[in-house]
Length: 273
Image (tube, rainbow, N blue to C red):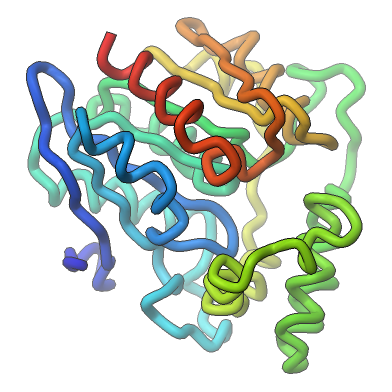
């Protein structure tokens, strides 16, 4: 593990493998309740051909945050990822984000296209407005209400209860009980960040947002994912100018954990073509 001092914060990261030919480093941005360890299932396959750099975002493991400061937000994390890539000083990179990390990566691509060569978005989190999806709901998202309820339990000291409520809402009843011990501990290590996420105030994606992404973009989804995530993915993919989509069979939202070989092949095919 290494660190880079970015915007007044020491960002921990893993740096594995080496760049070959014309393919730049791949920077990987994790999602909610995760950290750089979440990419472990695909590090082996990806680093056979790529240099992979996986940071932990502000307030995630290895920090043990108390959830109290106002420095956790989509906007802050976008600023931090931009600063992190700048400090790497390796030229344009490829950027991959999953879930909330996909939303962050999308906003980085909007704000600083000069820093990126290609973009990979694995079921980016967020909502869409009516310019992207005529039936898009108005008002607070149902997921935001679930995050708030989970965060309330976590703040009261019921870590497992809050995580179970969140994971069952995302992946279906019984999801928390099905998670093995090691990834369950990773979620516990980052549980307090869910308190910060109640203050994210992320704007919905619009058609203009999608059309502003100019670099080649790969959207990856779990073929069996339910709810808003596949709606967001397909709405964005239909409007990003240079986009392609791969659905990983027999997987849901954590598709790179469930099918690491198939996921890695899709990423490598896109980045090394």
